[in-house]
Image (cartoon, rainbow, N blue to C red; front, side):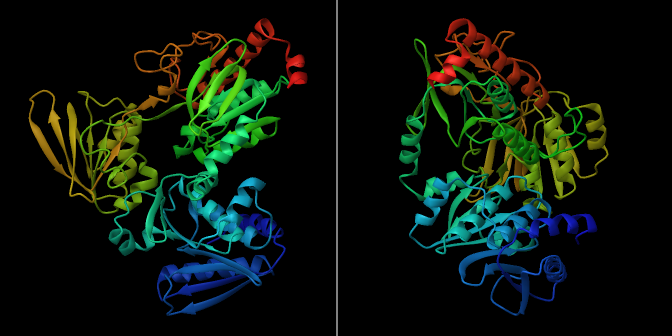
Length: 526
């Protein structure tokens, strides 16, 4: 299960373990239990501080295993075999249970330790989901820090009866004390804020105390990261307020067109972006959503949803874009109940079922190709009279026997039984006829929508809602720049967003030189 190279790498990590780790495995006679036993015994061979006890016929889910340390009340369990994207979650859990200090801000760690109620979390994940590890790792850490918190991470593919009975159609899905707590990617700060009712007020109070910045970047995707690095390298006071660091890249499964890097995955690329930014003196404020921009004399203010106000001499807007919705009846009602936007994350939950993909561009055709390997049948619905994907993708799609393509079709309604999706209605745009498809899932892949609603009435926006910028990244408001997928710059690509972020940062620095005090004086004053 673990090749020699992976064993060598894992052994070096486990050298950081400082206290014993006890693993108690619940197994049955299945092949998956034998695989789990093999994995756990490999861990024992790599670290003399790890011991494994195997139990058969217990009431716990099988295969599963609990991690703890003698003298420490830790309630952490994996139900399944944490390989794929979850292998990192396993490694981190071993280190943290083994006493290696976690990488978390002390203020957040203190909030977790102060939670004084019994909390039992269950997280359903899939091994192909790039969003799941953040949630699993956050809740595992909370279980390590606070004995009143229990967490079990469950591979939905190995426990289909649970998935079916709880009607889980999106991962990650988190239950707290038997009730749905949240779905989709969540950072540890977001989880804690949902549990600690005073968290938002505390965060706002801390942020309001921040001194004005020379450059404040709003957004933490590729454009925002590049802008922050270029600003910090100039030696000026730089801040980043991001709803989630990494942005849309976090939802990208495979990146193969970033020049000089043959292949990487979105979460890995996003982690590298954040690590690079943290190499510099940048004030990173994560999980902060901007609600309003106010241009004043000398300083620009950015109001956040939690009530905090950040001030800066210049602002770079890099809020990116999000998946565009169909905007039809039933879509919102059945979101995460059959309506999905990430085929890589949620596709495995529809194994052997019938699904539709909405959209005939590269994203839609790629989704249909990927899903065809998992589901029983895929119907791709395209509004235009022809597919818009690259020719090589279209040829691959045509070769698949379980895919139908419907052109000149407009989706008009999502159907459901009150609990989950049962189908959709589409209209033939030429003949005007309406058709109903019986389905279990709908994957929407119809492009991106810029995250610029909070800027309306402040900076000039295009008819599509994109921020209008000049060749320096300057907006219609002096001192306010913009970069990346939220702007009018064509071709929404990672490599272009990085360049545009750097350009906007250089434009902001030039603005500071020409319209404000010198950067050296600015740093001294701050």
